[in-house]
Image (cartoon, rainbow, N blue to C red):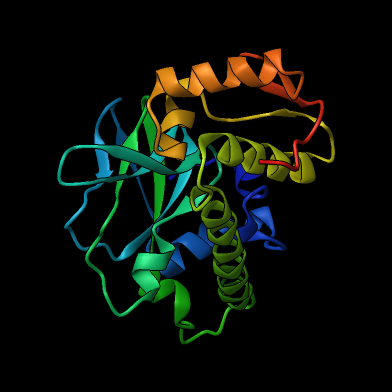
Length: 225
């Protein structure tokens, strides 16, 4: 199985694992690679999963759809992001979300049970893998809390400000770049695209922000929101 070792080294799940150990590690845990076409579901709501997915190439979104077909984006993933681990490690394996390929995408799958249980030879890199997995899940839980902070705001403007403020902290700049396009950002906020565009334009006219495509600059925070 050919993989880009330099790419995998950027993934937190493989932190401190040497590139020359990847081949033995993948054989140890039974890793396998699969390709998906644009628009194809990788994981589907209602199914059971037992594997963790790592994006090797392409673009994946984790989405939630209600009974009316309204879609909310929970995560926007590009290489080498990992997904599915929260459902694998819980007692409930039935998915309540879906993972879809937004373009032709390649995924490396790692069976969760084999990842989290040491093999008889007690490989040093396997121990690192388990440590990294626990650390990664904790980090993602913090990310979910940050998303909750955005989505629980009452107004669309508050959601926009909170989201941009979080990006500003992450990127250490008042000028930030979002990985989400306008349609995807609207889904993330639980709003329609026209409402989002209208609110962004109003905020720009009021001198609160400026933006060009997916790049935004925070000019002033209105604490009277």
